[in-house]
Image (cartoon, rainbow, N blue to C red; front, side, top):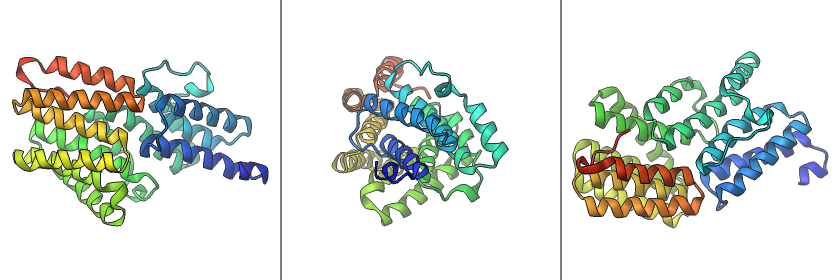
Length: 280
């Protein structure tokens, strides 16, 4: 608001975008339905004041937010610009910021829907020289969880290497800001312990990640940790315990407003069936 009053429209729109994007990935206590309205407002104002970079960079995150709520996608033509169209604009203008956030928004949808093959494919679209941007840790976090799960399913060493790299990077960030990165780092370690077959260490790490996310008020990542812990339990024949963790995940996702995740976790519980194997 102060930037708008001062006539600095560009800075005002960038701050509005940053607030929305940070609220989606860091979760500042804003329910997703309310956040989707903030995104819509950001799109409308960016279009009004012809702040096209902010406009296009908002759309992928807006779409991820709406996907999680389970609501219908926007009907407004500007808000429905495709990822391919946004990427084309980014490539034509050599706008790395726009390309980066277009990929991040897509990764978010595929990550939360457990489409891990697509997550790692998207992560590889960004060259290493671009791995220095704000919120870059989200890319590594998504990539790490996805790669470790794929390593467990395929026993492919390249997925293990990718997961270990992400875990190392998050561990380094944890030393910089324990509040922001502890729960993420521990969750990656839990997945690595599971990959190594060390079920006792994995069990302890899942619990520690849940506690850290709860203490640091990351509701969405607390829900994710409950979900992955539940999958771990089910796949290791701890059915009652696993079901309880998934029910806790449903409660946390509901609190966040991610009704699409609520439906997906319920489907996971049904798909597990008597084999207790959770599909990717």
